[in-house]
Length: 150
Ligand code: FES
Image (tube, rainbow, N blue to C red):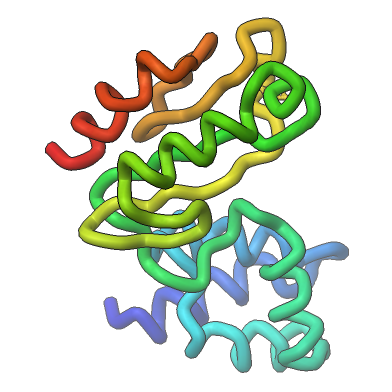
């Protein structure tokens, strides 16, 4: 099945339900790993929305990607509890160790923000290729960066 056919199938499976946009976007990202640019027009047309409205929703939710992720994904929590427990300094250390800013994908590594992983009691927290890690500190940064480069 082509990407276009699969996209049409996903859109059609939700188009008649109320609030179809988010389920469609979730399914598209689950299928392709990101929301391809070419998906915006068919989704907008099917839901009688403008392309800008679809793009606005994608941009609002940090979990939606407009580009494919790298082979490793590091999500650093930037919500309040983690920020209060050293998250800002941790972000700077990780950016330095990885050689990339948060929000970037570079050399196969996606480093991005997430807003609460439900691990607030173990702040600051992150998700490393889907694995939750808490109580991060400066000592953990080099090991995390090394794991990302593997
Ligand atoms: S605020 Fe970071 S895990 Fe909840």
